[in-house]
Amino acid sequence: MKVFVSWSGPRSHAVAQVLREWVMAVIQAARPWLSSEDIQRGAQWFGDIGSQLQESSVGIFCLTQRNKTAPWILFEAGAIAKGVPTNRICTLLIDLEPTDVLGPLAQFNHTRPTRDEMYKLAATLNSALGETRLTEAQLKKSFDAHWESFDEDFRAAVDENPEAGAPVAPPATDEMLGEILSNLRSMNSRLSQIEASATADVTEAFVRAAKAATANRPPWLKDDGLPRLEPVDISQPEKKSILIRRRPITGVGGMDPSQS
Image 1 (cartoon, rainbow, N blue to C red):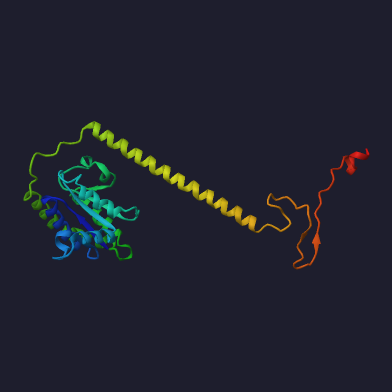
Image 2: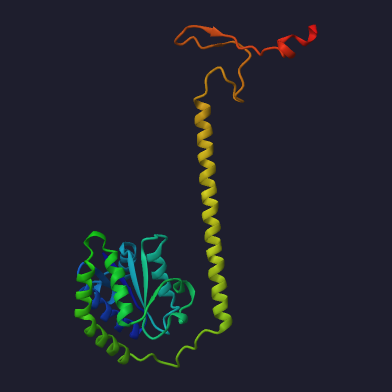
């Protein structure tokens, strides 16, 4: 299973390198891919990244206050999601809280660099392996064996790569409310699309059933389902002809009303 590790900026890159080594150590069957480490020299880097995005079913995005809305991060997240429900978008929050994340990435569950939440991230990666995944006991043992080294390396990567400039201010209340409204509208639009698709499927099913019933009707029935008044030769296989006539309207007791 390929895991795409996304980064933007020195601090994010340093943490991504630590994360790559940690994933390989904890879950040996996973294959984390990091552009700075895994693109061969002389290769067309954009084409290589595009191929990895296409092949990866899980993406981990190393977010900081500086890159949380970076276009490249958002592009890579969208490329991995690509409308496939089974694909996973995971965010690692390096120096921010879940409430700091706005835009498309806000809809995903975030991971802070704590022991409990990093174990949940490891469990997510492990479950994506399917039949080759580790048992819960194996995963816990492997996670415990590598946690302290990850925690130390993570803290060192953050300390050694300070973010330049003033910290980004937290979002204003109006901005957060606007984001919530935007998400609600997006959800409503998706529900409408699902309902429209379901209605179209049901309608198509009824049309197919009607066509099938029409194709299999007896030859002596008209298109409206009433008997034909003219003789119709249905001689195969009996070689006979029949004439279906409408019976006259009778009065009470079966008498012709014209004679009463």
